[in-house]
Length: 376
Image (cartoon, rainbow, N blue to C red; front, side, top):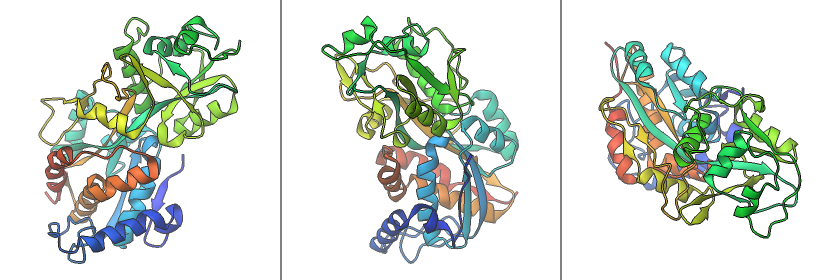
């Protein structure tokens, strides 16, 4: 897996000047805003905002890769003494490295489970900070020559990925696509081979929206045996591109040149847009009892509200509330503050097609990030 790595010298070369330039303009326009606390500034609050110095490493969700590249480039453009790397090795790998102390922060398309939260508190010697940072639709992608604008009901999607529907001209697919010329061609479902938060979110959608058709427990490991499997988001996208008749699931931002299924929601069909994805988060509820600095959500997968796309992932960033050294704490706090800021969310929207966090949600999670500190 490629590691996203930017230093003061390399930050612009990796992503280009667009995100960094936009951030610098935003910083100039915000010169009269209140500066962040010393050591915790994002570098986006104008000339009076403090910068930070130090090196931190992160790892995790490959769905965040494009956004992480833009975030790191933008952040280091105004924090030239900060060096941040991000290895898009997958959500499971990122959580494992974070829990083991191998990285300062992690990205995950699935929130920490109860047992992982306990491990994280031990690793952090205190509270864990877990906040949504990247909201994006999961596109059900397909490669079917001559067929566009394909629509599917949740139960049909579930049966395709469970290998119960095996031909593209199956009556269930035809019922959702009247008048479409569907080929007598075998369907090749492609799933993730690695532990994946994208898999967990997709399986959660199938289980919630089509419970009669999907009997498997929700997990970050794909449950159906015998299909085609690929490593990471890029692997799934590549496998679908390579095979006529293939279908898979991937973060929408990394699969834009493939066909995207419109899923049935209520009486209408909805495609994977940032706006439709954001609508789900707004109607979802925070999971209680996990701590004041943990913001994990139960998503409304079975919504029937028109204009809402329920096949969505909410990708989290997780960090410690306390680090042994102040330099690490300052860089982590500054970087995460930038990521969830209006500027950072705009960069992710422009670069990776993410759905920006709402102001109300940002106001809830910002204090948890601002409390990150160093020292015993």
